[in-house]
Amino acid sequence: MVMGQLDTGTSGLGDGLEAALAWWREAGVDYAFLDAPQDWLAAAAPVPAPKAEQTPAPKPTRAAPPVPEAGPIAADRTRWPATLPDFAPWWLAEPSLAPRGLARVPPSGPANPALMVLVPMPAEDDEGALLSGKTGRLLDAMLAAFGVDPARVYRASALPARIALPDWAALAGAGLGAVLARHVTLVAPERLLVFGRSDILALMGHDSAHSALHLRGFNHESGTVSAGFEYDLETLLAKPGWKAGVWQRWLDGGPVGPDAQ
Image (cartoon, rainbow, N blue to C red; front, side, top):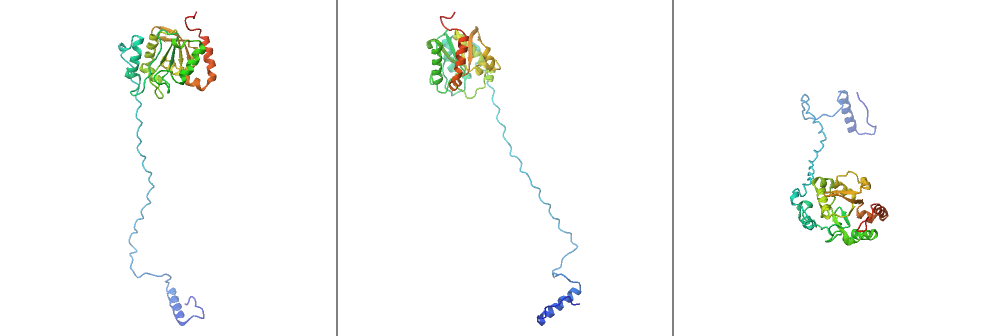
């Protein structure tokens, strides 16, 4: 059966092709076939499963090296200085007091002074002498206001060198507080004025800097000396208004010097 006809305008060749195609359609052949033989019973090749996306393994991280604990400071107390003239050379030479390579600054002043001024460590601009930079100039102005002769002031620091971010609690546990107590004992001042109370209080074993407002003494090997505890001099330079509180607390502490009652 002829499935369709070409247009009437087609040639005889077209009629023949259409007749041949109609014959194959009636035979049930609707598709083109290849001459190459194929094995239809062969098992189909397995389709590989898609590879699961793999997350790269994390790179191993190096553990931070443990922070070394501060070793004991001048553990052999039999070698500690027994007189004030012996203290400064020992202060500059004892290796456990400061890391090697840092410039150390000695204390200065007379024995049995009217006032001992204590700071945590030398300032950045202290060159050769403690409190010789801008914090020292602030201190000199305060001493003049207090009516204290600078020649009767002993200047000291809890550390001989400037250290970046010192751990004061660890230094206290290593024995620096005991060294400070020996220093005050040898100086034997009439009065002690501490600038940097939170740091020094940590060496004394106090937990909170707020208790400094109620402290009026510093305990050392030979007893207790009248003391005042203030913010560090760098803070007072940055906040001049706080100097009024220092002045008031100084007055509350009583006079200093040969005229003290």
